Length: 439
Image (cartoon, rainbow, N blue to C red; front, side, top):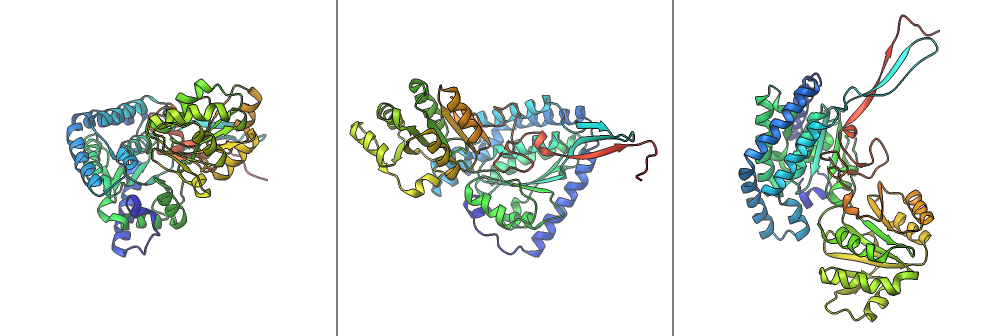
């Protein structure tokens, strides 16, 4: 599956494709067992070599990306997706810096999570171990190719990738460099493989390959994610679409709020941590909404406002503003565009209730100075990340210090929030005895 192609129902998988993908996953599993025996120094040397090789071949990868960008533009891809698809020399350099940062991080494999002695003297340790073969199905996001490879290799995992048709040339050029470097360092190229050659059938085969692929992670729009969650026989870590909210409390510093909202909405519109909804307490709405609307209008943001917000903004007579009436569908929509839903709420609790009803559980932010309001919001909002007086754009594995991320998990099992090295491991128990038997 690819981009929006991937967001439909999975079809019946071709037997030959399924067999080929299973063989690929089994080869990856065998390569992963060899990688698991490598020490941290060897893995770090491999990552640094990959970063150097990507820098060396940045012009080639960027040229491939330019072809993908041109084709996507001609096919009518919207601005937000084009922004995600872009992988120019500067973005390649940022990705390679992320790889180098991953190399500096502590190796999670072998870390003792907890340990204790039983009364009979049996020593129990719970230790971190690699998951195994991780499958990634993602949309037009070529930086993910680099992120996944670096995180999986450092955490001792193998990766099977489906990067989508829109970024096919970019991903192929990037993977060629990564796989050649893996081989040059004495590891099996099967550690990082792609099913792109099989198109959407490759993605369907990954979802069917239970017992061959250990876990599947979809990363992209809501349609793609839900298609994988609904159809996969392989266990899925669900990453979330970002129907992200900012709530301006009556105690909020309004001067502080404007730049936060602008950054969260406009810095990059096509990313999952961009703000999509603005909730404003009624006590400050008359003063604040015209100021916020003026700033957003100057940034060419279309506002979809509820009745009260519409009335306040319309009365302000802001020149050039694109103001529309919101409908119920707006509150559940991730726009990924220069568009924002605006609503006036009567209380903090109404804001919390609205967010918990309509959010995708990704990131929310409160602008407030009242400590009790901040504490109530952060405790009751049921999302993976909650910001206080800060942009939602900070929800990112690189920003959190992970070097890279496999995605933002919005589920509550195993991992939640940005997924870095530790989230790419599971645990096992080791019991050290001296001849104990159970009676």
